[in-house]
Length: 194
Image (cartoon, rainbow, N blue to C red; front, side, top):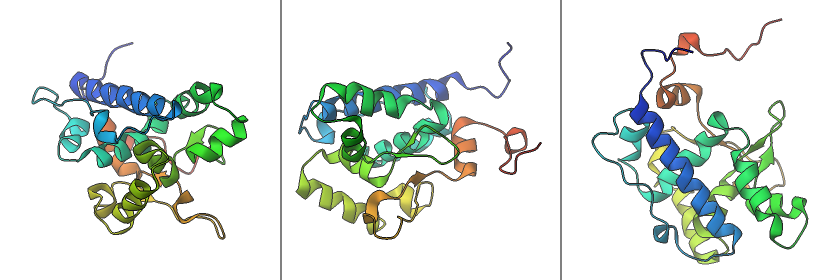
């Protein structure tokens, strides 16, 4: 299989590093580690890592970097969230349904994998630290997240009578295409065809 000329190895390496960091953060939370996000440093970026993902990432603080890779992960590797948040946490007390509640994941309608919510982000970024969770809720709500503010990540509305932060974290398709260097005219459409 030939690699398309638009393929950018450095951009892909930056994404892979961020996914590895996401795994480290999740493993830490699965061990009930109360370490702050700063104790699990995001991967260093350097000028050699050219590409849209690396370029955007280097402008973000660690919570936004976590928000970005968490929101992007189901589009790249559809089983990653299940693997790191449900299966890896299997040794923890409780049934799988409790792990889903703890991590805030929701299952898609058409996509049968798991999707992250703002509750997933809060779990990963703050663990069970209530004070830090409330600070991050304010950060998300008040537009201090650069990604939320610029609508690169959207917090979908929650369902009636459910927790406010239970909405899915959503990346608009143009953002996904840009970060993954996909030409929109070659991407699948949302209308399907028979």
